[in-house]
Amino acid sequence: MKNMPLARAFTSFRDRVKEEKRVRGICNRIVRHWTHKGLATAFESWHDHARDQRRIENTCGKLIARWVNSSLWSAFETWHLNVKEKLRAEEVCTRVILRMLNAKMSQAIQTWYEHAQEQRGKRDIAARVVARWVNQCLTHAFLTWFEAANKQRRMETIGVRVLARWRHQRLALAWDAWADNVAFFVNLRKFHDGALDKLGQSQIPLRRSQSWPGLSDDGTCILDSESYTSQAMTT
Image 1 (spheres, rainbow, N blue to C red):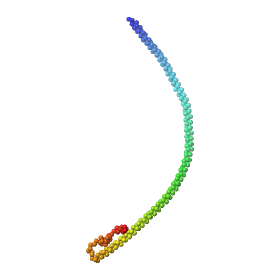
Image 2: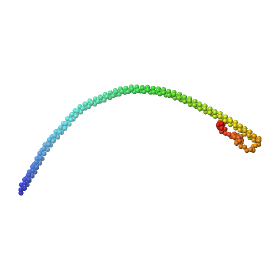
Image 3: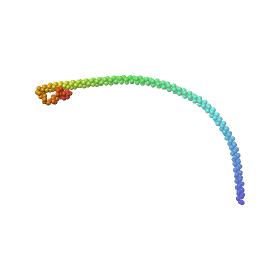
Image 4: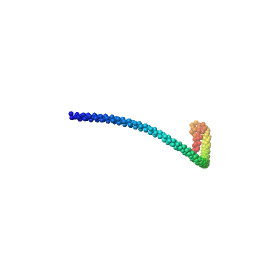
């Protein structure tokens, strides 16, 4: 029984709190709606102002860019003309300098060519002089060698002739001696055969080829002339 007033008090407090929360929520929604409505109007105004500002900035930017571009175009055109003129002047100067250098180089090349031709002529003359001198030396040496070779060949020919004559003389002497010996043996054989016939001793066997060297049984010569010649020359 004692807790009943407390329960009712708590229930009424709870209801009052709920009511205050409900009222506060309604007020918050109203205030938020009003605030959002004002913010929407302000945002739309700001959006329109920003769009106008952007359009004005774009227009001003185009105007300024056109003015700047016109100024830059005139400056660029002036710079382009100056560059073309400078390039033309540099090309003309380059041509003039190249012509001067070519003229100097042409003179130098002509001088060098003349000097080279002169040196080549001197070299050819010196080569001909040296070649003539060398040919003279070689000719003298060749003639000396040719004379020595001819002399040597002549001496060899004379020596061969002398040796051949000496050999022929020795052969002739050997041949004459051999012929004399053969004739002597032939006569001696004939004398021997005649003596045997006269004495009647022909029945005695006698090998005439062994008894008379150089003669056959019929009395012809069987002695070799070359062997006899070699024996004669060795003696």
